[in-house]
Length: 251
Image (cartoon, rainbow, N blue to C red):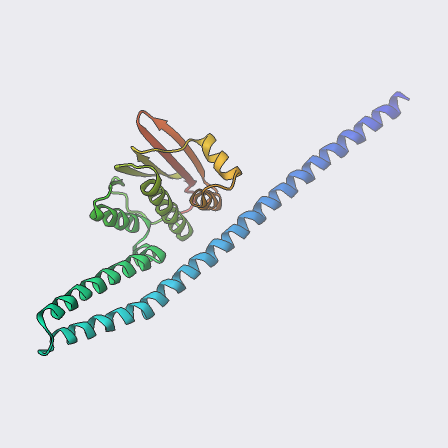
């Protein structure tokens, strides 16, 4: 009886161990499937961004250029009155503003600098563009670091940065954003610090669980795709978001 009981305990223990191993393997496969699905979805999204950006450039950009040329030609006619000439000048300015807006949309959808020169250059251009608007001050610290990352890292880091900066500008009432980029042999870390209203990790989980904040979900999705970590904290009057990803491979 003792021997039989021992065999039963052994087989039960072995069965439980095997069941746990299978459960772990299933979980690993499910996680891999989710990451692969997310990666494919984001890849499709990037291609769609490129397609839309090119269509806007080719179609709407062309129409605006033709409209501007026509307005200039009409404004030069001797038969029009002075007040009509002023109206033409005003309309030309409106078209110029529309063309600048279109360029901004195209750059936001498919920034050429990102694909030609990399994440650091593209982020620097984005910060300069925001600073020109004079709505908020954005400071980028790279410590003269200009190394290229893996293409997938560059695209996702740029999209994450876009989303975080836009969220800060829209919702935090911040006057200042500081971005630090650090890279070592093991990891790449980007820190976003601002002086406005922010959220902490507990609040982030609440928003995600209650389907609040599309921008936050986009950030988390891209962080998962990079197999990275995200940390939110507050130091004195500053809210700080830090994202770190492995840097085992380099271009």
